[in-house]
Amino acid sequence: MPQQDASSNNPAVMAYNAVLVLFDVLVFLVKAIYIVGKGVFEMAVLPPARDVSGDIVLITGAGHGMGKNLSLQYAALGTTVVCVDVNEKTNQETVTAIKSKGGKAFGYTCDVTNRQQVVDICKKIREQVGIVSILINNAGIMPTHPLLQQTENEIRKTFDINVLAHFWFIQSLLPDMIKQNRGHIVVLSSIAGMIGFKYLVPYCGTKFAVRGIMEALSEELRADPAKPNVKFTTIYPYMVDTGLCKRPYTRFPSLLKMVKPDDAAAAIIDAQRRGLIEASIPKYLLYLNTWFRNMPLRVGQEFGDLLDTGLQSDL
Image (cartoon, rainbow, N blue to C red; front, side, top):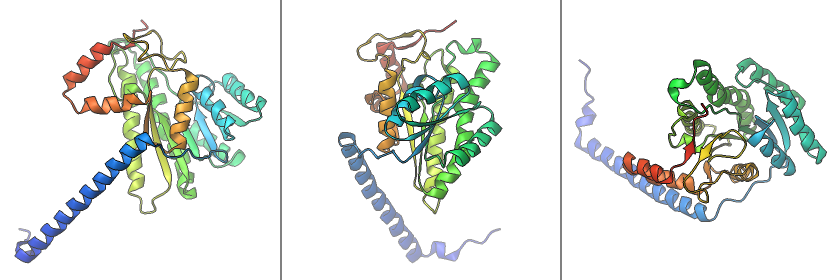
């Protein structure tokens, strides 16, 4: 039988430990009040936008849609843009468009689901361009039909692109960010990463996963004794009009209209430059979701029925 420490039954030791716990609780309450107050203040007065003209930003899925818009807008800010896409032709078109406007861009063809390709490409980028200081994990696909009609290949591909590719790029680029004590990782989750939608079961699963990855990775680095200055931002866009969202519908089109790609890209870049941990597009959706998550599930479902928004099956 293990022997009990005699000091644990000592009244003086017990009283001392109780005082320590009480002190820790009071410190926590003071910190909590400060953090809440600071958060409310920053909702009204955002942190200043950081200059990114000296940064190297790597954007996946840069050949089309959101990736292309992000690439063009970052380049306009003087950032060196590294465009990565599986489609060499469209990726090169993005690079050409940036250079035609006097921007700095480099193009690399890569299948983001292939870990070795990602590792090799990131090594080549480090040697040919420099150390990436901003990573935008943007590449994604969205099959839209009932789960029982989703094929094994569709589900695996959705997770390979929307989830696993994040790991390959983060593992390849994060060590340099930690070493430089400077870096920022931005991932595109989705409103479907906060709320479940019909016909998007695998897609929702991937976007919820991305949210968890970012929260856990942030905690992992926060626990690092070196406290590396690497920031993390998770973006939750509503449906963006890039062609990925097919057959959308909503009861209130003026309230929940499709987001223009240019507007979405500008909001993402603004969130990154201001160092926001989370941001939704439109902004109010993040706060609205937080509010309804504190209520019974049925309340949120009824509100969803009221809004009647989503995507129709493409089958």
